[in-house]
Image (cartoon, rainbow, N blue to C red; front, side, top):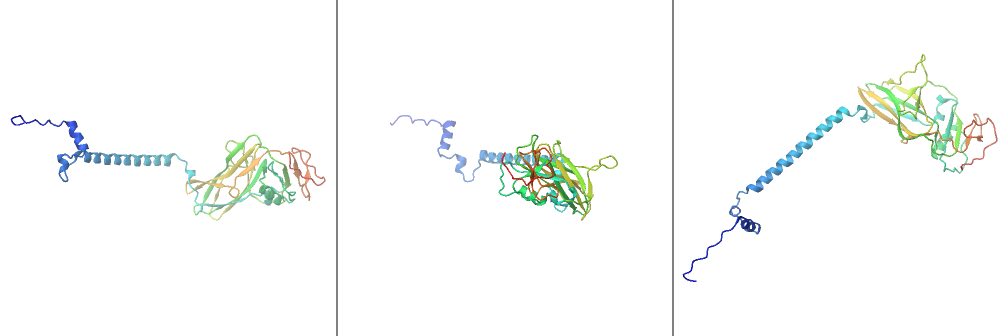
Length: 306
């Protein structure tokens, strides 16, 4: 090979140089300890800016949604301060003397077969029937006792029903049990409510000078008001009671239940009707569920089948 020309080394293209770097061959800048790497540093800066931008945008959106909710969400959705009012419910109307000799009726579930005859006493009967799942027939009567607990006073300006479930046609039910109330007289605020209305709300039953007064009253701290609610339906309605309050210029709402359970009222007639006549000491069977029971008759033999 003497005398020959030395072979010329071919230059490395840009593509080859990239392959060399990927294959582990460092560049001149990488050979230097602590050498500058412009592209990775730029990527880190851009990534930090991207994350900061999304954080600022998320914070702004959350603040905007909070402001909109504060403007447009009704004030009565605020949680009720437990120190505003104290509420007590008497759900057994036979223990309330307001309704005097009113007739109470319960409807048993259609598949219930009690082992023993129902008790004769009206107050005991209602508790016995409800323990078996019975519901009020056509009318529910509830006494609500409200006591003010706020130093600033409480205005109660509405009482309404929150309808959980409604059926215009009465749902099938079992036998109907009727009994009379007890004598007595008090002066509560007697109110009524039509559960079949689109938005059931209470109103006073008694007219004053030919006009029905608007519902509402104010409670000072320690002051107690008693009002008796009569709620009726021609179908089947499951519901609870809601009180609208105004405390220190702010609206609040409290829900009233039957010891944590909802109220249920139905107009279902049932296949048979039994009743304890006023002052009677035994049950009698009525001729038909839709007609009044006779004043006298032999003791009934209960049949719960359809």
